[in-house]
Length: 190
Length: 190
DNA sequence: CGTTCATTTCAGCACCATCTGAAACGTCAG
DNA sequence: CTGACGTTTCAGATGGTGCTGAAATGAACG
Image: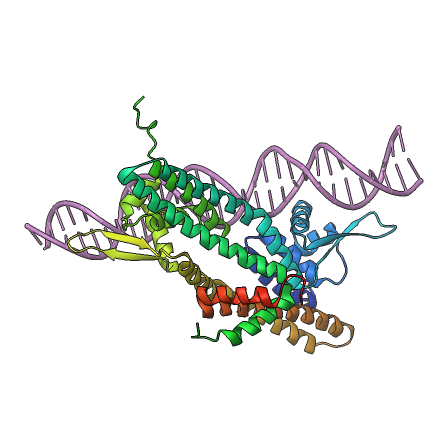
């Protein structure tokens, strides 16, 4: 009764549990498992870590660790750190959840929302053009179609405005707004 | 120059463009391509459609169409419709984007957010237990770990509150709140 | 009941994202 | 310039999701 497998390090176990939860949250968010794990570990670790330690601690390959770090840096939630007299590169995570949330929303807006909104407007424009270039019963049908696409585009636009308000306000003010909102517009009110 | 392939039906082309955009938005949202396509087509079509028409129009198998419809009904954005004197089942989509957005947020909360929050609290509880069951330097480390997990849990909790405010308010009031917010907390203000 | 028509389920296949491991690359020290 | 070390890239392997097509199921009618 002294095999390494029997001696669970409590710290490691606490970490592991949290890492798995975070990794699942990341997946719901569209981020892959390894990336989520690496992010979680960096969040929990006070010191910065190098690729080697990450790979060993999480039981993943160096390649995977390297790619995950690259992703996280592209998301802007992990920083590269160098230590004088040390050839290695270390990495550390943003430690405030609201800050990284804000950062990822901004990044998603840029990568995903903006391009898809452009395509949506193109589709709406095409629908409008088609309806104007036709007549009779067909025109009526195309106008109805165009109306529906515009309706969806309006919704999407409002949704983007909502994102923008969030990005402009930041966490503290956001919280304030909602506290105010709860008073101004209680459940059942209009 | 009269082959079917050359004669593009403008209505169909308008629909197709929109369907592809919606399908991509769905994928960003974690919903698969076919489900997104079916949803888009049902949104655009004034009449209700049966599985056959869906499969033929979108060039997918009956099985796939059936499964996609099942998903959409589970999300609560598509209704089953029966016509007297007709053995077929027809389906129609919720036509107001804000309504279906509200519905999907509620459903996601139930399916994904609630279970993951439970696991997060379990992880936090485990961390607390571990730190209280230890002493000395190890205890200090575990307390720090616990603090970080709690910090993340607090963030997550605030995030869920935000969802709840949205669900309680609905679209109209939501818009009001944000118009108010823009005045109360202009960019740069605190 | 048996037949026909509509729908759902599901085994097997195809495809795509992710992971590994090793080679290529870059960089610093001597 | 050369060797050692650290990091990144990438081809191929793996695993998992989604799709098809056909069989099973169910529901209406004679």
